Length: 199
Image (cartoon, rainbow, N blue to C red; front, side, top):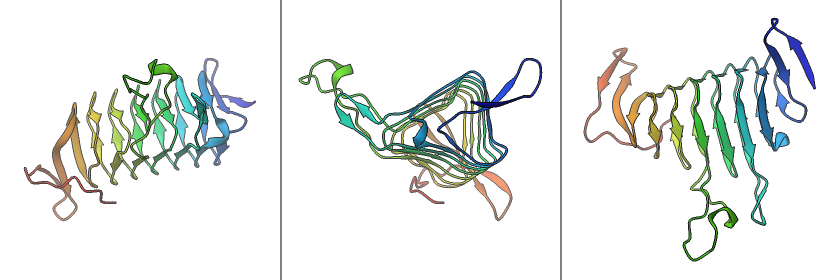
């Protein structure tokens, strides 16, 4: 395991098995399973307490997960990512502390026995666009795509896609404002605003 000392109290690591771009590091401590399925781009900084599970087998079922973190990404302390499909975080995005991202659910069939013994399911990958900001304790659930430059409020639970330049919040999250590149301002959301994916 390669590391370099940043200060007396902080160590920066590039864990064996994870694909790293230049000048990217993870602060200790961290936990990563399925390391060969994790790719981190250039100049990205991930703070301590990271927990990643790229799940390749569960309850007798095999999966092919991918977790991709882009270039120039900042991820705050105690982030938690779990995937059986795909999680992608776009270049330049910033994730605050305790952000949770998952593309999978436990099986919940009442007739299939214990929950922990049922295969995992997914509604699709999670795609976070470029230069997005995810607030403190935001949760991003399976099948969600966020377009570029989205802002997600603290404690939001995102259950559906939102287009580029969206400001969203709440649980479940709803569109609050949308940025207009033409005027350079955030405008109040229209009641008929579309949630179709725009990148």
